[in-house]
Every structure is written in structure tokens, then in C-alpha cells.
Length: 251
Ligand code: ZN
Ligand code: FE
Image 1 (cartoon, rainbow, N blue to C red):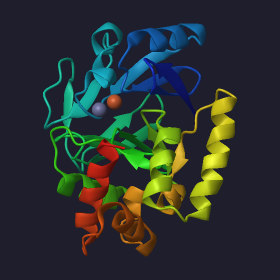
Image 2 (image 1 turned 180 degrees about the vertical axis):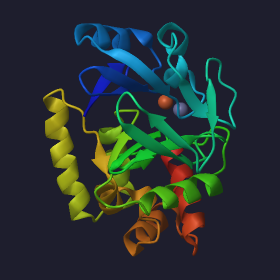
Image 3 (image 1 turned 120 degrees about the horizontal axis):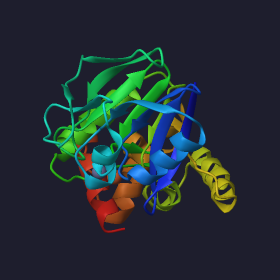
Image 4 (image 1 turned 180 degrees about the horizontal axis):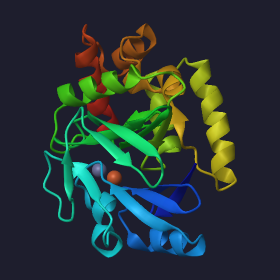
């Protein structure tokens, strides 16, 4: 099985999972890159997976779907979605011999879902490397709970985020948690990858727990960073998360 990033717009990745014959596209905001890749490689599109309703994740559905099933969140209204999913549902893609469990991960949007196969997570705009999604129609409490849920997955889970935001996120992470050698090492790796035109993704749950301040609000080092910026830090982890997310909005 191959999972390839198809760059779209400024900084999106449309992840295409394929076995050399059939393919699944995740969050195809633009049809063009998917059409080009599947034509070049002689693939048939077996399904489309959608994580949330934003246009940069759904704009290619109409041009791509044909007879292929389009899976998406039950709690969001998205044109072209044929099967609406909630946590606990299973998506079986017989042509690829793969099935995904569905997780509810609201926060970036109110109905955002993720797709989880063993070792593989498609998490849309909820978790990024060294960062997390902005709050649009969800709440900070929801996003904190969703990230806590993702952080509980096995450390070696590969995390396929849908934006190349890593270097900008790492700049904020350095301010939020000045002392973190693991994060500094990841920054060096990502600078090298980007200067060679390569993606910094997928990342892993284990790495994100080590470098991502939004998964580290229980750490004294992140509380210290917040205190240095705000003058004080909330005593509870969710309160710190909320303030960290607010700070990032204006960073
Ligand atoms: Zn989004
Ligand atoms: Fe997006």
C-alpha cells in the first residue's frame, strides 16, 4: 500500500492511498492533482474520504466522485457525501483491502471526523505537526478533548495532516515552550526537508507528544512559556490549552 501526498493550493496535501490499481483520496479540495495522478498511474478511484466541510477539503468531490462512494461526517452537511459517519462506524474499502474506524474529533469544525486504520490516521485539520487547527465552528473544550483522544493512540501511528504548516507551527512552539531539545531536533529535520522541497508529513503520535505544545499543556515547560507571555497560566490543562490556542491566533 502506498500513501502519497498530492500538493494542492498553497499548502494543502490531498493524501492518496493506493495499491497500484485502486485508490482512495482523502479531502480532495481540488480535483486536478488527483485526476493527474490517477491517470499517470492507471488507477481507479475506489472511494473518497472527507474529514470536514471546509472548501479546501471538499472542492474536488463533484468532479472526482463518479460512481465512487463519498464518506463524510454525519454532523456536517456536505454536497456529494453518500455515506454519513459517526464515531464507531467502519468504512471498508474492499478494492484496497483496508478498513477505517471513524473518530469524532470536533473543535476545528463542530462535526470533524478522523479515519483510523491500524497505524494510519487521517486527521484533517485537527492535529498538525507542532500545532493544531483553528477554532471555526467548534469550541476550545471540544478541540482539547479531541487532541487528547488522538494523543492516546499508539506512538507509532502515522499522522497524515492536511496542511504543510510545520515550520510556522514550530516557530510558535519555540515561543510557547522555549526549552525542548526534541522539538529543536525536529525543527532542524523539517528545515532540511522543506529546503529540499519535501513534506514534513506524515508525522507520528509519539513525535507530536514530544514536540507539539498543544499536546503538552500538562508540562511545566509549557506552563512556564504561557506564564512568560501572559503573566500567569491557568492551573488546569484545558485552560492552558485555551490560552495557548488564543495566543497562536495572534502570533
Ligand atoms: Zn479546515
Ligand atoms: Fe484546511
